[in-house]
Length: 629
Image 1 (cartoon, helix red, strand yellow):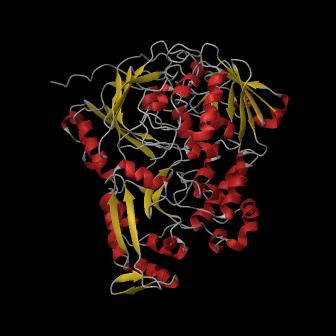
Image 2 (spheres, one colour; image 1 turned 180 degrees about the vertical axis):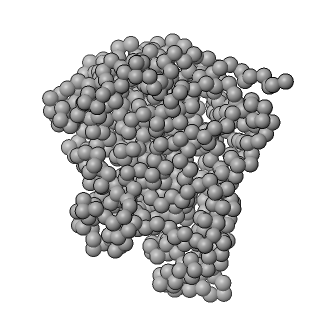
Image 3 (cartoon, helix red, strand yellow; image 1 turned 30 degrees about the vertical axis):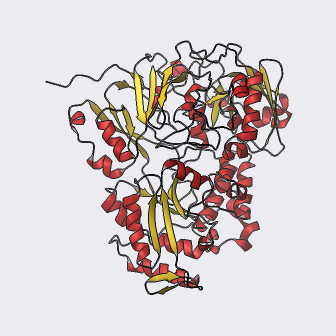
């Protein structure tokens, strides 16, 4: 699972947390919101940032509402990784730098860093001061002046200064993972104005969320960067300033972090009640099946389950029955995300939209849900599933205004009901859908000869499904069986994590499963996933290779939206175009977190709306209770 920009802000900016008591958190009433756009010309100093100026927490707030500010410190937390960002893998690591494109980055390394600001887990798009106590916005939103807290310190005791921030962004602009470099392209300059002020200058017409992205990136030590080139893969422990530091690790097996007891920012409003565990450890396994066995043996303490079969059948072991392991489902209010098999449309055999549609018709979700997933999932149909950005019904007049300039190059379907994958008869052998698929393939110039689907030159149609573990093999195997029935020679190939990362970054695959989640207010991440520029950028998240001027135009409309309503309309129009393009075969979503944990944790009464919050807001109660009797 890939993290969204918002999740990266929650993670790299070290997620946020607080209790629901208004008396403790003192959330701001609606009329206390600051409008960034209106105030930018007046150079107003503020304690937080958001897309459209609305901030839940007022100046002087003491902590986030979804944490317990009095949570005790201590105890261990350990898990198998849940999601990745940039160059990370869930199965191994060989570098402690996940922010460039070399190697496989270690999980959890963001815990050792501070960021200028930290995202709130109960707001759609808001950040509050961390390294920076405040920010002044001037020049119609093109200049941001961050005031650093003079007490901020790296783990070696040296102060965090404006020079460190400048050096960090110089490294990011030059050598960071391509997605970071793309996100920062509208950041034209980062300058130090004395030891404790950083000035960021942005290009006119910048994407709305670029300042928030910059504020949520980790800050490195200039002295450390001088001795350790940022663009290299390295297992030397980096110097950070955050709530944790690296304690020990074994390459590819585990990495463990220890809480910094004298962490300089422990009493900040954005940190109060958070990061309560003395140690945080990530365990690595060859796949999630092996990882489940490790959890049962108490090799680690917390697990989120993503496989319906395992959730339905594998959590009735003795420790669960004895109450030593707790299982629970928690609501997931974030976007359901984009998960599916993505076509690599850079390859000629996938150029034709009819071919992609035909292949999609051969995946029988309804049979798969019933027979392989215990009826526990719902079909994904939209790139903005379960959000207000999701296109529904006929285009509104506002959507049509955005779509009309591209009518000549768009499928007519874009101007009708949005595409939804067809429902099968549930038998696993829907001959009607197979017939439709064969007709589309015939229209695209393919014929079946001696049981093989071939093009006009007689070349066989082949598909390799690429993966780095076997977690999707059961689902893909059934799909492959249906592809073979129309003559497509399809195979499922598992490669080691390093090879998978390399092939993914160089777009050397036919089809691959990816999962993405967007922020409640999508921003420049739309470019990273769907733009022509990203399609041509090695290592980008645009694995499908989408390169469509209409998509680019709608992304620009979304980024230029003056308010939330306009952003919603632009994303709805974009959703219609992407769905009509048949760039992926959508899979499924759950809408809840399915978790299991050894019974030695407590958590706040309220979960952060847009994040799971386990590592960030829970605390240890000591060892698990003794079994009854």
